Length: 74
Length: 156
Image 1 (cartoon, rainbow over the protein chains, first blue to last red):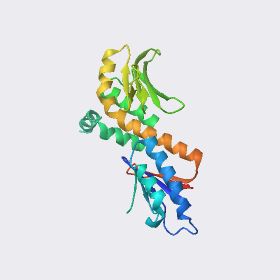
Image 2 (image 1 turned 135 degrees about the horizontal axis):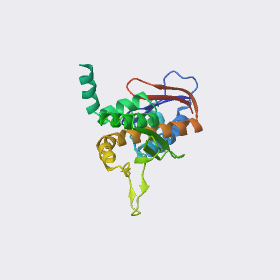
Image 3 (image 1 turned 180 degrees about the vertical axis):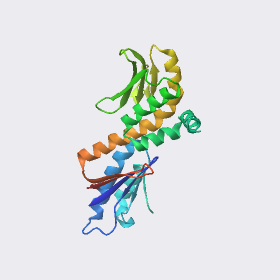
Image 4 (image 1 turned 30 degrees about the horizontal axis):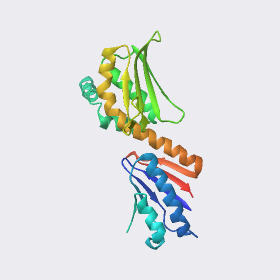
């Protein structure tokens, strides 16, 4: 799966570009959460995830995303 | 007229200029360029050489200002992340130390370098992070936009 990490002046955004074939969003959500957490700790900046459909960020994964201080589109 | 314009520009070595320089060059080159600009601003051009080094973990950078004979006049150390200070207390903000035998030079460098330290520390942290991402993931493309934003395309 392709992901764009966008380093802005005061934040970082992880974007999953649309129209990718065969993306397992459940696995992708877990991987992106881990990557986002690492970036947030290293840079001490807010991190946002975009491009993961809301239904794949529910339950435990959703809790983990917010527990790590990561935001995403609701 | 041109000289006047340049003089005005050189008086404005604030955080905006720091970020502008950091957008145009890698952090360490930008650091050397910025300190050189400060020296030029104070009429010290040509008298000193500026060199910047960084530790392997990229957690602090050291700039030395030496004269033509190699004697050190001033040293700037910018820490880019939390570290244990002399008191053992853990400091969280980027820490800046400006010291050296040439007090005049140290005093001239201090205000401008203080404005540079925070954006430099952030730029260095981003560089360190991007290198860590490169080491762990497959990076297919890396682009720096005119705005200073960096896009790293990776495969996970």
